[in-house]
Amino acid sequence: MSDQTLELKGSLFPLSVLSCADLSVNALRSGLSQKLAQAPAFFYQAPIVLNVAECRQTPDFTAIKQLFTELNLVLVGVCGAGAELKQQAQQAGLAALQLGKDSKTAAKASAAVSNSHAETVNVSMDAKIVEQTVRSGQQLYAKGTDLIVKGTVGAGAEVIADGNIHIYGTLRGKAIAGAAGDRSKRIFCYNLQAELVSIAGNYWLSESLQGEFWGKSACIKLQDDQLVLAELG
Image 1 (cartoon, rainbow, N blue to C red):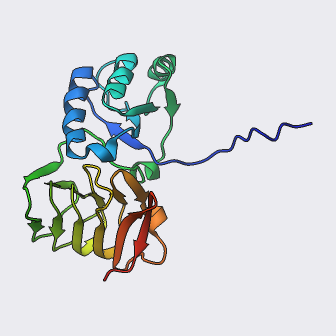
Image 2: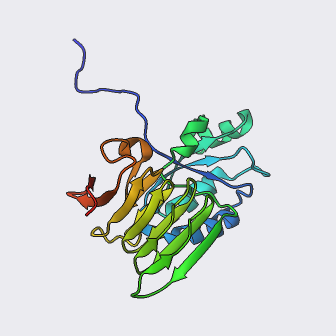
Image 3: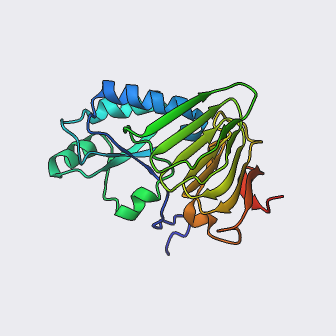
């Protein structure tokens, strides 16, 4: 008689892919600490895959795994590894994965240590207002306040706020509200075509958003620990 208490099925889960040519522990600690400081709640216990395709040295996977634990990240495995690196990663208890090109664009959030144009907005009470379009590769962070974008947030761009996010154009990139953990914050946009939306660490990717409100105005909020979409207004 077969055992019906155990069921093992294939499934797909969003994973962040971290790409960095320098995978020394010191370089990762510096880059990741800076990145995590921008949105600590969003990245808390986030599952990460390490892309070693452009790595210049042999990574110490055991030490990197320990670093991720210290930073409250979960290192799941590696991708882009040759036979030797793949074996070393597996010996450190990591999975060896092969991610398709679509998986990279569907990742929860880019944790890559890169040379993107970042702007940290140090404000207290007044909302940060951005008059122009936020272009691909740019990142805006409104610390301790709301963020208002009068233009479009382009694909590959990222807007983050500890408060609410208001976008008066099209949202094609990523929008992360309540980055410091405030679950009452919301995202408002006039045209929803986002790669990712997140509130207080709870997120949806593009695939989950392509329903009734796709291409329309919408409000995204948390309700009973779940993201929900509603009409704007």
